[in-house]
Image (cartoon, rainbow, N blue to C red; front, side):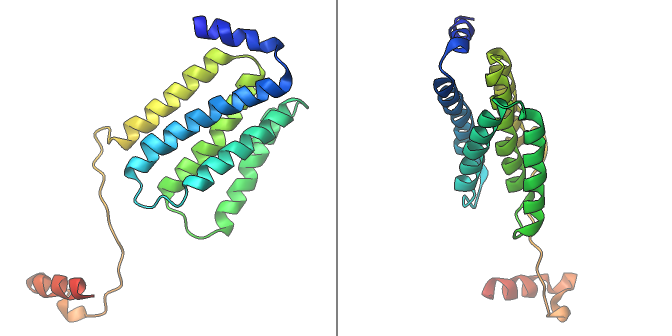
Length: 173
């Protein structure tokens, strides 16, 4: 409660300072999600820069839009824009697209709540988001399996009795 009282004093703070403090909080939450949850499981970490860059830019766009009363509409507009980008880019795994969606949603939520002075909602929603992601990434009773689709031309080896030969052939490639 003392933290919320301290944050409540930000309502009279200079708008630039409030924007900067909100950004720092938002970036810290995004960093926790990416560094301590996503990176633990990600084999390919090429999207880390993209996640954090998108998160930062969206926060500042939303922070500026909240001052001109476009916040929610602008947020949905950004979703539409990035949805179009999704279909225009190379194939991105679903898991990575989910993290991108989270990194786009987080600054919209944080910016709207922060500009409204609803610091309790920011903390509760961000903690719950981190908790849900952590539970889902740790399994939550679901068995995660990996699969890989291959085109295999040696049809004569695709028989149960020739499994050892097929595996040996695949390993040699």
